Length: 99
Image (cartoon, rainbow, N blue to C red; front, side, top):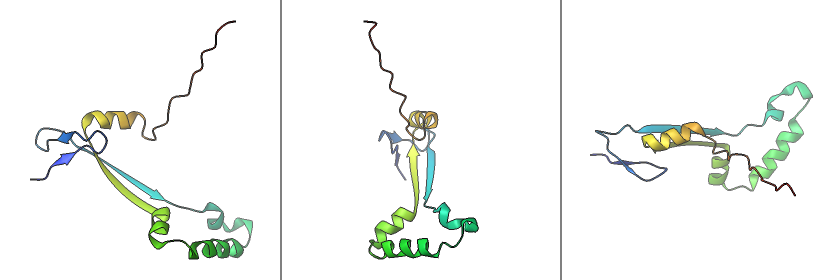
């Protein structure tokens, strides 16, 4: 039998009684300035990028260009994730005295 646990809170998820939410995240690098040919010839830009990439580690480069992740969430963590998927913190509110 396969056992699941929440990737956020580590709580065990009973596959018979609990709902398990699967969150898939795909991350792709893009270079918009290279994709648009309206601004003219981008051969120099591409050459510079390729030169920088020659020294990079293949695994590191691969992860910088594309990642596909999957997470299992329990119902409670799913609700929290759904409210704030990018984990944006609430704006800091500073309280100043009247004096």
